[in-house]
Length: 368
Image (tube, rainbow, N blue to C red; front, side, top):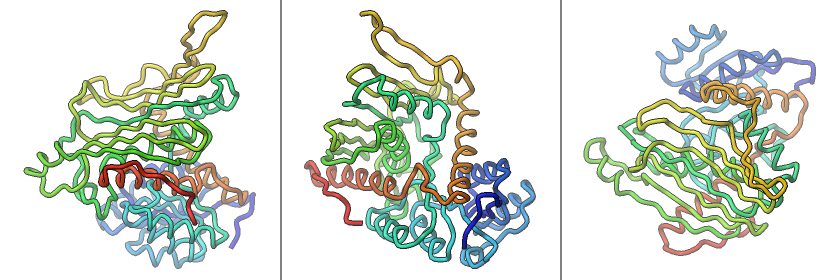
């Protein structure tokens, strides 16, 4: 089954939570995509989404959806433990796949999915929407221009001030989620930082995870067996190092989302977060560049990317789905590949193992 470069791609969305709604919006904006069906086990959500967006068909069984010959590609926006299972079923049914992060809830499942992708001639893309933020693509161009020199050190993190019970259900069950904020939020910031640095591979990882506040929350919310804070030190095969930190709940000033790059000729810092512990996301500048001009220290910010944080976020999803559709139409590899998703999962797995075993984990190249 192929899709010509001049044809529309018939797509379907499986899973209608918050990410699934963003995928739907993205496809509906794309003249090269035709959203023909949606799928979810929740009948009320299925009915309301179909009505809100005017989607032709709504199904409750993803297997029935994958059996339809008129569907070329699917977005999989399901809970973590279903990513591998449903992606493999979709690929084996001949569909192209855009799957939400993380690749899977365990490294073993991620390797199984990666092997399936390698064995089939289908487009597979991992949904890492931060790569498609316009300010991040601008920063990527600056890094690739060489103006910062060689990036040898980076800090990245997503730290939340308060949990407030908003993270619950399968998110707090390690068997289904794969972990807490490391695999939920860390996947974004680790991927973004590695991507900006040119996707080097990890060779050694040290990690620490904490359950202090999660244990306290479990007294009112029920059993929680994932961390509330996790961090890692990641040594890369090009000699560079990344310090990663994530939390769902921590006593800090405000929520903070950031990545900072330090190079031999300059540096860069990207930061966004809440203005108060309960406030909406804001951004003082898309990013800052730190360099030296005529022996003077200079801090610079782009002047053409000043947009609201919400607009930048929603645009990133539309850019992401448009890139996926373009790759399907042109039969080319997406910028967010299954192997890159597996590398992220491999690093996060090493952080958890390092914390559990109290030692540094030395990584070897994946056999997949």
